[in-house]
Amino acid sequence: MAPQTGSAGKETRPVSAFLQLFTWEEIRIHNGRGQGQEQWLVIDRKVYDVGRFSKRHPGGSRVLSHYAGQDATDAFIAFHNDKSLVERYLKSLLIGELAPDQPSFESNKKKALLEDFRELRCSVEKMGLLRPNYSFFFLIFLHLLVLDVASWLVVWHFGISFVPFVDSFVFQIQMGWFQHDLGHCSVLRKPKWNRLLHIVVMNILKGLPASWWTHLHNQHHAKPNCFRKDPDLNMHPLLFSLGKTLSVEVSMGMFGETKILLTESYTQPNPSSNLGFPGNSPRLIFILFCFIVQDLFLIVSFNIRVCLMYIPLMGFNNFMVYYWLSRYLESTWFIWVSQMNHIPMHIDYDKNKDWVSTQLHATCNVNQSLFNDWFTGHLNFQIEHHLFPTMPRHNYCKVAPLVRALCDKHGIEYKSKSLLTAFSDILHSLKDSGEHWLEAYLHG
Image (tube, rainbow, N blue to C red; front, side, top):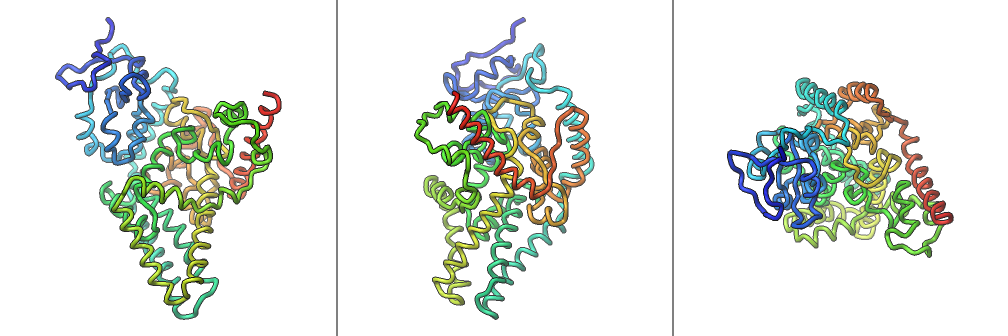
């Protein structure tokens, strides 16, 4: 018997005792791009209309739309530790469920892999690997405050020197890794407390908008290396061409470019043009455009605090050089670390792969060492971080052998490399993309 469905033209579907039944074909056409622009997604065989709610979604307005027309079960589980909390919202969004004759997995997703991964997820929860170690994060925060205070004390007592300068930008980058932990709700048990402390750390101690970070970073985790869904790829095609597929498209004019583009800018990219750019303009534009008064107020308070601390000691001109150079070096450090795990990996449009394949094809690790753990804020365990985005970073090393075993069982490459190799692979991948562009330009 054909599945029972409601009229596709209705904006809302009241939930009754008898849920409407849908097929995967019906789910796929409600991807936000068709008539009515409805956005449906599936979580554990239940069908939800998230179109209106997406604008109020705490994790950002676009994350849900990236899964419209798809099964979001594993992404939902990965992002939400407190299922009872989010189920309150889900009840009002429920419009039906998959018909009994419909499979639980989409046809293009690897059923055996997902089943094993879900078992691994259950084991991770039972082992307590999603619970934070408060002592670990307290020591992280304490050493950051010591760095911040020490930087000022050295200037106050000894005057301007190289030591407080290094101290300052090391403090900023390490505070960046800590705010990353808070943004992923992996420091405290309750999401609301993580979000509150994230605002304090990001806005007041780093001088950047927490809402901007949440809006962009959650999209990156939902669909890594998926063009038009991962904001980390927004440099394409304006600054760099990324990946074979996208590079060939640029060269063939599918984005409207003409062949007046300079060949050298694609074949021999200059890493300093993007990999060290502080990126303050997009951040400021986002704040001003959205009129986020809270972020603006807190960021202004950060700048007032820093100015009052250092200008009386070193003068305005010295302070400006000190501040902006340290910001530049911090951004350079951050960009190289954040891109070493992704830019060299496969980049394409969203192919609606299963959760594990999506993350493994877009991420790689850097070999563990005490220095690498500190230097990268434990983001050398990028594979584990992407599979379990709410896992506290001190547990990555514990789950890594289990993830590697899962990959070996299903024939998925688990990439891990040295830190210097990871950095050089960024340039090699940009060079390869440029060569793909040039080949299509000359022979397309």
